[in-house]
Amino acid sequence: MSAVYNFSGKVVLITGSSAGIGAATAVGFARSGAQVVVTGRNGQRVSAVGKQCSDVSPNGLTALEVTADVSKEVNRLDVLVNNAGFGLNTGITDPHFGQTFDQMFATNVKSAVILTQLSVDYLMKTKGNIVNISSIAANMTVPSLTGYCMTKSALDMFTKCMAAELGPKGIRVNAVSPGAVRTLARSTRGGEAIEDTDRFYREVSARYPVGRHGVPDDIAKAVMYLASDHAQFITGTILVADGGNLAASVNLTSTK
Ligand code: NDP
Image 1: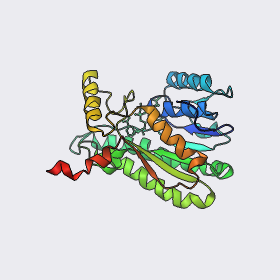
Image 2: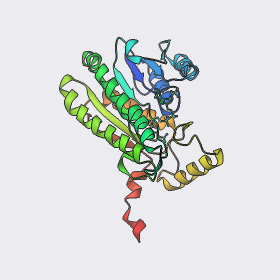
Image 3: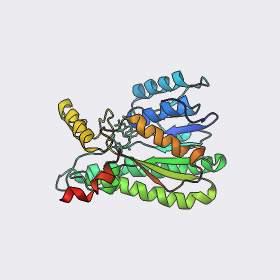
């Protein structure tokens, strides 16, 4: 991705940036001059993405790599990207439903709420902004992904509430809502054989109006737009980046 935006002098923290969408977002911001904070639980993956960020930084900045408590390491913040998240296939009758429901809420919703709380003072000083990574699953029913869909709906509402509450403090809050993006996807498709995963993305590509599934850079670009000065009048928006999937799924010709 070329450097369309200029984030020089800005500090950008991306949760869950050791892989997938978060990693592409971290590299995109780094290429645009930002000091990025790469986070995740796996130290090796965090370091690998941190190195990629340092390699592309036009300012020679070294990415800050945090595998533990992000709130203790950062003393300036311009952009917070709440990206860490996962979805598990568990039906309501599955005995593990309650447990996976709690885990998904903790990662997909509670972490965003807590990090937002911790970031407000910093973001007020920089007139910064927050981008939450939601999902089109917030707007559709997906069999056995009830818990995941609910977490992303909650995140969308949190985004809008925060836009209203933090707007007067000079902080914008938006979300990007991706469709199917081919990541390592250890979380959602990790248990599947690779040929099943390949088939899934082939079907997605056939169904999506743009003729392909998403890639992490598609989402990184949407995040960077919302985080940039080009979006100064935009807050409380859920920007759908799904190759037209949601629009196509309400196409009445399919009921003929
Ligand atoms: P990946 O599984 O590829 O990456 C997830 C990232 O989050 C990793 O860096 C992982 O790092 C980190 N992470 C997960 N749980 C935690 C945790 N508890 N604490 C800290 N870090 C964590 O996921 P994607 O890139 O596919 O997804 C990123 C976001 O995009 C998620 O919120 C997901 O719901 C959303 N999304 C994804 C879509 C897709 O099709 N891929 C579609 C719609 C939304 P580590 O393992 O090192 O902790």
